[in-house]
Image (tube, rainbow over all chains, first blue to last red; front, side):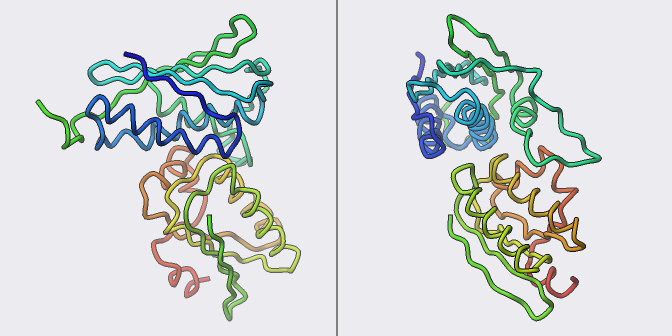
Length: 140
Length: 112
């Protein structure tokens, strides 16, 4: 069953992300998973890019999550400006830049990351491996 | 996020942060660091031990401060966050190897 929510497309609105993720993890018995923090950071970074760059006119970010046994699949969509991959400057370790680390972070945490522009909507899909073994609260 | 600033006899400005260092709070930190530079305080010790979340915008504020300080012969040194969630962004971006990061602010002040 998908777990859906709508975030306000603002930096303050992104603070509701953690509570939603807690609800998703609790619903599937992953409350104590060690993976949660990294996954929150990755989704937060994609959502922050929406706030900073896509700037959806309706002020909303839609989130939907589904789960498999040890995987979390998240779809994030908005009706803002189209993402331009050519505008992303890869970080240079020899000359640390100030910005541009968001997608680098997501790519390291997620097992897959995909972007599609469909009907004037940005659609990000992410998959995450969840460390279920670290969850001491789950029942067999 | 709370920001507390102080000074040290070795001309090191201390900045103690707590809570979330995210895009919402990064501007406040940038203002503090920019003001320090304007005041000629180029050696900055920032205590992140009570910070529980850092995103790339928060990291960017620290990186800009470090680059500005190093340009004029100073530096920004960090006390590592105790929270693994807050430490993660430094590890994923390898900035844990760019910043001087220690577990106790006294280590920074003693050895500057």
